[in-house]
Length: 161
Image (tube, rainbow, N blue to C red; front, side, top):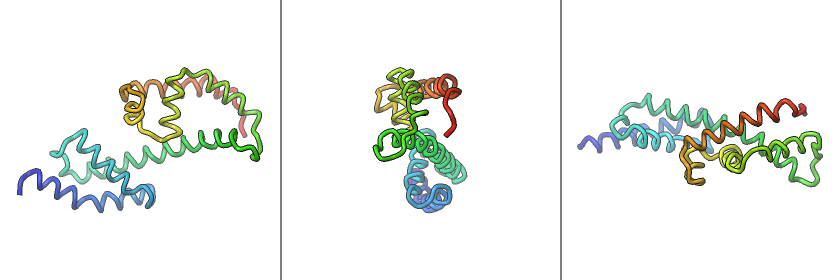
């Protein structure tokens, strides 16, 4: 058995354990997606040689799951705000809606695109970069600038619901 075959066999053997670990973090619906993402990240950034480390794979699964959970929490807040504005029969939150719209207009076009892709659509910074044709670091910079602006400029004026 060649070295490459041994690494692939190890990944194949470890995959059910990765899925089970991901399932404990995020539930059944996304466990396989997160395990696959972890394997792809290992292969993309570390290469096949580091695939022998099950603890590294489990750490990557944990990090991917945590990232997904935190992104889902943030995007659910955005979705609630957008849904509250879009549904005609829902009670309107007129106090917050103009402030949110004003704050949204205060961002530049690239910042709005980045927030829509990362926070609402749930794409990673790397995926958003591919969509926008910019680097992952540029997406991160636009995202941080937009969130900082929202926090500093729009946050203090916003009233609690």
